[in-house]
Image 1 (spheres, one colour):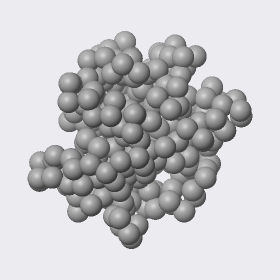
Image 2 (cartoon, one colour):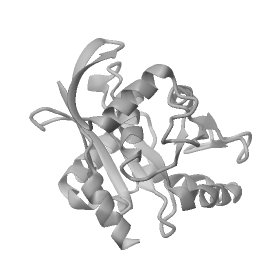
Image 3 (cartoon, rainbow, N blue to C red):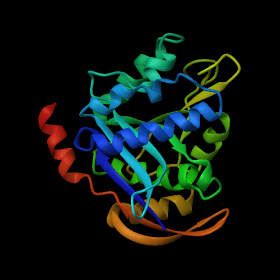
Image 4 (cartoon, one colour):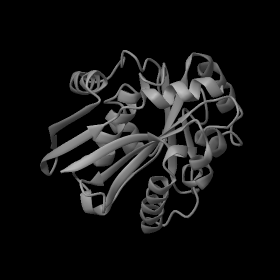
Length: 238
C-alpha cells in the first residue's frame, strides 16, 4: 500500500527535504547532476505544492512531483531551463498566467517501485486532480520524449511554438526535452477516457483509498489531495 499526499511546500519543510533527497538519488543514478527542477529554492516559495508518494508508515519515500504555480514573481523551472535558449518561452508562460497556470515538475520515482506507475500514472493524476483546487486552467511540463508520450494520455500536447518544434537539448547536450501543455486542465481536453474518469473522481473525492492497476499488477493507493485551505492562504498573499 502506498500513500500519496499533497501539501504546500512551505508548510512541511521536513517532507520537502525527503523529496529532495530522493530526487537527487534518482538523478545521480542516471548521471544527471544539474536540472532546474532539482534546485532547492522551490521549497521556500509560497507558490509551490508537493505531491509525495510514501510507504504507509512514512519510512520510505517512493516518488514525488511538484506543482509550481506561475505567480508572476518567480520563473517556472521550464523558463529557467529553456528561456535562455528561446525567449518565446517567457511569452508563452505569460500568455497563460492570467488565467492560472503551473508547471508539473521534479517528477521522479525510486527504482524500488519501477513499473508500478507511481511516476508515470498516479503522480500525474494527482497533479491534475489538485489543479481544480488551485484554480488552474492550464498546466505545463518539460519532459523527456518518453514522458511526453505518457503525458499525452492526460491531454498534454507538444507546444511547437517554441524551441525546435517544441524540443530543447536539456539538461545535457545529448538529452532531449520537450515542452508540453494541457491547455484545458478543468475539462482535461484530449485526455484519455480512463484518465479523465479517474481524475474527476479524485477531484470529487480527494481523500480515498483505491485499488489501482499498474504494469506489475494492482497496488492500493491511499490518496489525500486536500489542499483547498492552503489555496486560500496563497490567494491572500498575491
